[in-house]
Length: 287
Length: 286
Image (cartoon, rainbow over the protein chains, first blue to last red):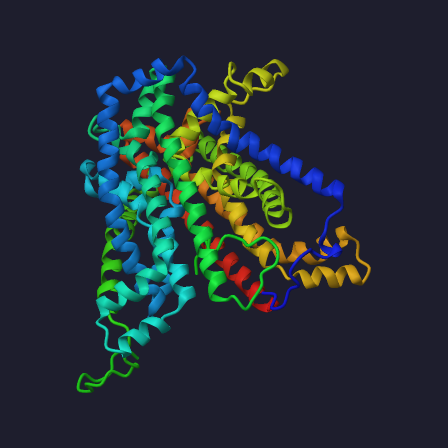
């Protein structure tokens, strides 16, 4: 990290020639437009292709509502389960040293590398067909922990130790000291976990081949509609999930902005130059 | 070493000041065992129950081999595309200021947040013969939807944030003094890039590449819509697992999954050691 940096303009040595900047910006924008922005816009234009009435008609379908209800219910169960696990795992890993710690971290990383289809398969094999919930939990159980572990490791445990020394109980320490420190990371973990839980497709889809109707979440409902060539209806349901994704991204930006603001307030003696990167912005930035 | 005499009452380790170690660790271990460790171990046990004969007949059948080839081939190409453009996007986001930078920065994470099924139908609608892109490309003989090219497109969408979000912090932490020093010693901007910036960013770029690759191999939701799913041509390995399962061919599904799992583990190991390399690099720079 650069200790002293001159605030203000970047030095000429760091500036790329104008034509390089123009070419790189154009390339980057073209790529992002083709691969990110246009597909996002396409979800909405396809849904509204036949006008608002056709769009709204898609929600007259009781199947759509049952899918939405099930998705909300599933998220309402998954998110708290995730938060409890995420906080517990982050507390154990960030605040203590113990043997097998890196193995535990690898286990938390594992679901990322395992195909959702395989997650679905193992649950069908091991626990029988009625464990779709487990498969879907396994796919999503890591979001909160992945957000919190790097954050809590970076913060250390000095403040908690001080609180304990001053006679606070363990739970009070967590509530008054730890929680305020991690609230933004926790919030983002929760919202990302929520988006993932609502959008999970692969793992649920594997099990649904066996008990269709029982596991008809929104993504599966989209698949059914799409395969029945009801494109407008499929995209109409998809807009809800796309909006959810946009809200997730907005919350993430807000959280990162708050975190960097707090960081700047803490170290007001230092002046950062250049754009501040998102603090622990990736879920993969794992210790 | 752990088995010390039981009559020593005082624990040898320093007492932990913070409470809750036993509870949180115990809970984490139980939870992970139930949801990750036992299911995966079970998969390998099931595989071990097969004879080598059965196992090899399944995984060496032409259709399965073709599916592996398509899965790994398309994932690799998509990861290469992502490595290039992901680096470019990270560079632009860190080094240049332009209107809307925050919005672009936020939208890079879209593939994380957008359900894969939604991405799948959106991309298919765009690249199908009557879609916005498809109607431009197909008259020129370029078919994207329902071909392996379509799979690459979907996997590129899925993998982009992994490269950007791995490279971006490294680029931002790069000591600009080094670049200034290089410039003051007479290096051109290009020479500075090749000799100073590139070596510093390479480990992170490789990590991002490996992450995008690992993710793409297992991807299912976005691919099945755009792939067309023709056996031997555009059928990915995860889809083959689902197909086997739907035909109640548990042995087939298990064998294909076991091979994919082993490869995923190897990739995860690789990613972890790459990340250790990144940290080491970062540590040496300070």
